Amino acid sequence: MRSIFLGAALAGLIASGAQAADDPHTKALAAGYKAAFLCSGIFNAGQTEAQVAADDLEGIYPDYQALVRTLPATVDREAKTVSVAFDAKLPPRIAAWRPALGCAQLPIGADASGVAKLPKLTVQPPAAKAQWPDGDEGATAPGPEKLAPVLSKAFDASAYGGATTAVLVVKDGKIIGEQYRPGWTMHTPQRTWSAAKSLTATVVGRAVQLGKVKVEAPANIPEWKAPGDPRAKITLAQLMHMGSGLWTDGPGNRTDEVYLGGGAVTQWATAMPLDAAPGARFNYANNDTLLAARSVRASLGDGKAALEFPFTEVLWKIGMRHTTPETDWQGNYILSSQVWTTARDLARLGLLYQDDGVWNGQRLLPEGWSKFVATPAPAQPPGDRGYGAFFWLYREKVGLPADTYVMNGNRGQFVFIVPSRKVIIVRRGFDAAGGPRFDEAKFARDVLAALD
Image (tube, rainbow, N blue to C red):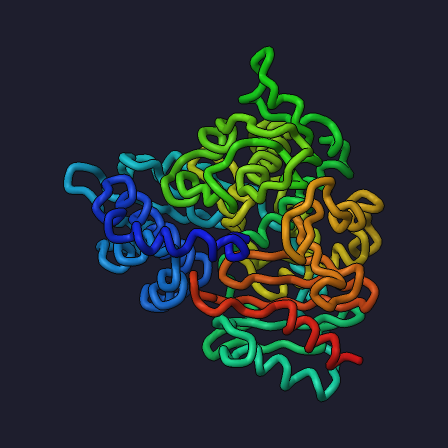
């Protein structure tokens, strides 16, 4: 959820934007940005190149904006690849799509021969169910008349700020309000950004329920197994609390080398040294999420079972059939940000937590897991928003019920879970970096007031 931390760094990024455009590595990252988002937008979401350019490639980090607009892209719809040239002496940056797994980037310098070596998912989903929440039939129920005007206001930048694409409200398990911007439907996915961290919490929770991992035990990171490595003591819970103590390159830890550079999770996230005692400091970091997912993958054996796990044990079990978690080129899920999904699928994830991890009578998450992720971590961020375990805590300080916890992602991705009201509120958007932020707390307050 880098948007919370963006303000302090934005002025410096803008000032450095011009000089960054001349840096060869920045060009490679900008090319990766363009290749990745065009690939995912076209082949995950079925959008045109122009649509992706207008939404996903505008209002982005200032250090890449000018380059992303000008670097030439080639879309191969038959091969389902996107290539972006950036250096006459190096191959273009390449992102390639695979069914269910979406797009993966090849490393800087890799040519198109690497596409055939990308991991692929071979397992097939079970037969689809029709009825909500597994399917879409019978999903809706009438809402109060006061709700519709609030949802419409979300699309008016003068009301809450930002650029909204979707809003959805669930009450007592049914969708009582839902609206999309023109041209979008309930099945149009977009990137979750850091709201994906809450999906990581769910994958971890499912692994705990199945006895594959223990959240209070040291994380299973093979790259930390050398005798005497102090990082080997970091627990899975400390990673989920953003309390690993690992060094990062500033608040938010953008992880550009993985997200945009084609670097592997096991190459970058596992390489950070300690600079604080584990559990003693809150430091919002993408790496902590990547490492939690890495720990689950290693505990599942790093092979086919690990690649299938998010689908067979979480997504398909709760009807999230329009969700695409993407991997790096070595098959590590980039579950800190790189997931494409819909408002309805996010609502399904919210329902799983509202019901404490039980779905259709089957317990998928450990009893009390919802309380665990919504309990304040030992070390807390500054400001009026607290942190649990890959969920943010908004609560009374921003005028919301005491039990409110939130999935939160860059560019305005929010899922409020309010168990005491049996309400879930979803908002999706394309809020611009440095632009007016969507006031999600005010929106949530207004929605709840409309339900009184």
